[in-house]
Length: 116
Image 1: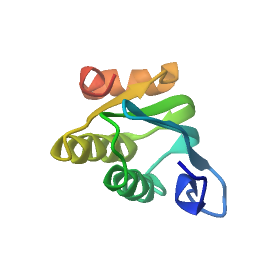
Image 2 (image 1 turned 30 degrees about the vertical axis):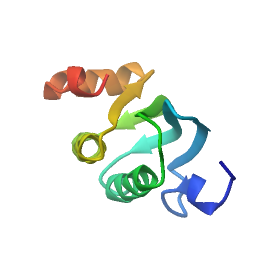
Image 3 (image 1 turned 90 degrees about the horizontal axis):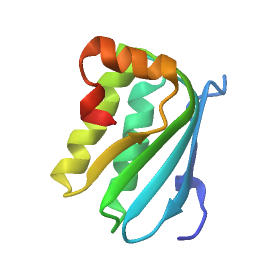
């Protein structure tokens, strides 16, 4: 896969969230996120991830969230929307290495098992 603008993403000029495609093969499309997912950037993140789904032959979308230090309910909603879009495209989707604060939000919302 060639590196181009669609494989690097920044939420906004504030720089609170960035993403990059860090690996792709026939099995996995791995996207690494860094920063905070909140109502200000969650929808744009979901649009970017959904766009990536259309251009992959991978079986699984892996969202590496180890460097995501915050995720609010809007972020969780959009991650679930991406998971549903992946399923419609025949892909599985998983949230890998979520920070403990993100895991806590997922657990409180009752969706931890859907994404991890």
